[in-house]
Image (cartoon, rainbow, N blue to C red; front, side, top):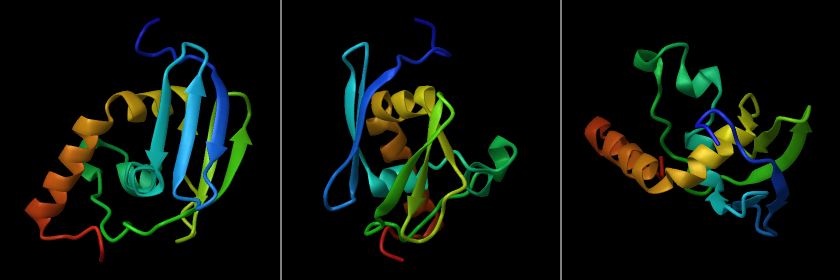
Length: 122
């Protein structure tokens, strides 16, 4: 499997408290992705920008919840968060990347918050 090819998801489940999206793939990889993490890593242009130097660090999402998970074609889901952000399409490949690289991406996000004087709470 190349890095551009994602395994097909066999299950996508939103937890009862709406704070964790669990994704299991056909290659047996499985990830529990927190709503806060998914929100701050949104693949939307609003967060990622149109180039790497436009990427935004999104603060204040510690308590965000996922309101809905909607399929988009056969390649992605659209997540709607309780702050009404809903413009990111989370492809299967992107969800796998977020799961596989979670520790590194999360550490990078926390470092960016600190560097910019921002908080997970505001």
